[in-house]
Length: 368
Image (cartoon, rainbow, N blue to C red; front, top):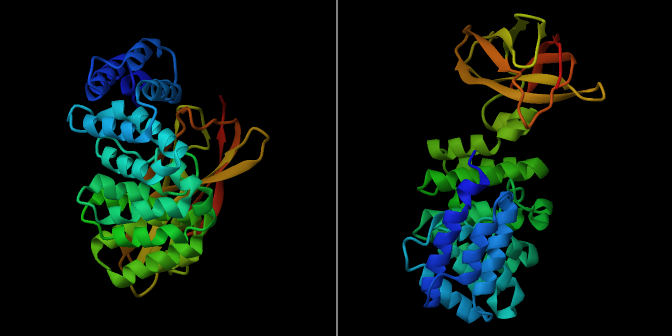
């Protein structure tokens, strides 16, 4: 993962000072230029805030003049990449400060997003006045640039990672659904992937809405692109074993399958080792069976209780009588996003959302 200084380092900020200064009609923007030398040791969010504030200091006070300067900057093809990220944030500050700047500022973010996505910067507008912001963004579903079209679906995601949630859309996703519907068949895979991720966000709070939406899309267009979008958009529900989502995707929870395993190779492992197990799934019916095979590890928590996490194994169609066998290696290498604890963990298989077979214990011999 890139470091903060790689994304928004002194060189990038110096380049921003130069481009912004040109748009202002003079030499490098002075406050931004001074800011570049004071970023050492700061996190990315702190750097963004510092450079944003410097940009605000160097820009004019009145919104029409701010827009004029930044539209001029956009004429320079070298005004691009991470240098524009804090500029997007500055536009949001101005857009929400002046009553007559709300719509023009959003439209300016639409122009800026091809240089580097403005998906974070549009969210304060959506939080301040959802329907007013959506009226500006709705026409972008037909924009020529896929980056602008993606801004509609990505910027309105209720639970966009690393961004403030949109409480109104978490509570009720309906206002964004017409936008997703318009973009579901977008020619760009980049846009369709964003639509799928938005649908997945919806599924976390409103599973029935997500499944019904996916059902409508498949009924309108059962092509391979739509099927891939829907599968990706319902992935959390599939892992959770949601019967409606699994049935819609053709993975019947009551599929006639026989499961063997997991057959754990060793019942004691240590941090840094792999849990290795074999498994088999057989179709015992007289018709092809579409199966989603997952495994669930019940990790030991600090208080001694266990919490489950689902991991994918395979998705495939088994012919009548066909048997699929495989071996899985699950890493217990120490990572920053998970803390492992000593104790007896459990592993179990899951087919089409239904637990199959027994829970097999194994000992994690030491924790961090």
